[in-house]
Amino acid sequence: MKISRRSFLKKALGATAVSLTPAWAARLCFGEPAAPVKEFRLSASRARVHLGEGPTFWAWTYNGRVPGPEIRVREGEIIRVVLRNYLPEEASIHWHGVPVPNRMDGVPGVTQNGVRPGESFLYEFEARPAGTYIYHSHAGYQLDQGLYGAFIIEPAKESGSHDREYTLLLEDWVMKDGGGRARTRRRSPMGMMGGMMRGRSEQAGAPLLEPFYDGYSVNGRLYPHLEPLEVKQGEKVKLRLLNPSSATIYDLQLAGHPMTVTHTDGRPVAPMQTDILRIGMGERYDVEFVADNPGAWLLSARETGLGEGQLRIPVQYKGTRAHTPTPPDFLPGRSVATCWDMQAPYPDPSSSPATPGRFIPQTLSGGMHSPYWSINGEIYPGVAPIRVSRGEQVRLGYWNHSMMPHPMHLHGHFFKVVNPAVPRDLWIQKDTVIVDPMQRVEIEFIADNPGPWFHHCHNLYHMNAGMANVVTVQA
Ligand code: C2O
Ligand code: CU
Image: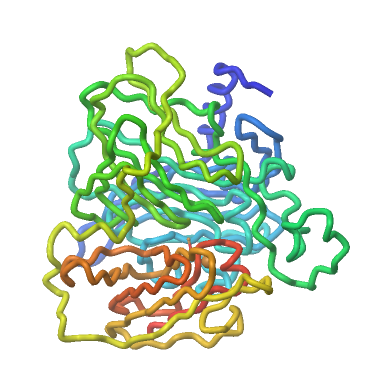
């Protein structure tokens, strides 16, 4: 079914009239200047969702829409979010990437009890540091069902010289199978084999197998049903790219324009130009481009040959006549940026080579003949926490023994990516890093945020199939 632009606009307007109520108030604090408080209300509820094409399906949403409303605050503000749960299951909000106090981290069973149906929970913390983050539910498969949105902390002082900015959430969907993630629950571990294997008993409580994604949307719309990103000749345009997908890594290229990467996972990097950028689940990249090539272009993900409906975002210059946008070419000679090509914008004076820190190996495996995924052969839950002392320097050494990439994510901290090709004081900071098949990757962090912190693969299916543990920072 085609949707006319008019009815789409009406729909979009309807969707923004939700109960998102930023309120300003003064906070009374002894001895401290009052920090402004920003309040938001998010209700988790079921809602009918249509991506512009394909079936209308029941999604699980924040405020009745997918993605949830963008939450935007300024660094140093106190953010207060009331989550009210109208779902038939426990829910939560996790502030992916933000080093919040442990009680506010939103991981049921680790940092709080899940918010029960009909109940509410108040999340409150100081928004810092500035950057591009994701908020999402951390219960079961709810991220895949639609419970996520963009969380942007703007710098306290205006920074950056861009003229225009867009936030783009990259999403994977099961279209043929009913829309959303309907029916994926029924998949047996051999589900990929299709009907052939039906009847083979599914182990009770066995994790779900990753479904076959065949729809890729941006901010809840499938191409060509999304509004083009409008730019004006001569502008510097900032794109905040966020990947809340459950199981898809994207290689993105913008036709006709190189991109300059300025931030990864909210942290600044030395500006780096590239044609193609790889972004894994849970990662964020801020990029800029100069609009100096008028026309109609596509920012697209590389065709994998697997799914149809690849991710596409039209970019349209103001005043140019609309025509079919030109796709990127992904030619072999194009530069591809990953976090391994990046370095910090300035040396970190606190990085001392004299403290090697504690080394904790983390072997990642699974996937071959088992529905489970593991770290050091252990399957979460039922894994002893990794205990570290407050202030300790910790190095996690991943060794991926599997044939799948794993974007590993640590809560409560930024870590440095150990990169032998870059001087130690210029290692970049991130909170999620892709560990490729058979690759070894080391990360290092100061355990300065007390409490139990979830640590896991951000492939939702791997996480729920055991590839997780808890790093407990003892106070
Ligand atoms: Cu997006 Cu445990 O995180
Ligand atoms: Cu994984």
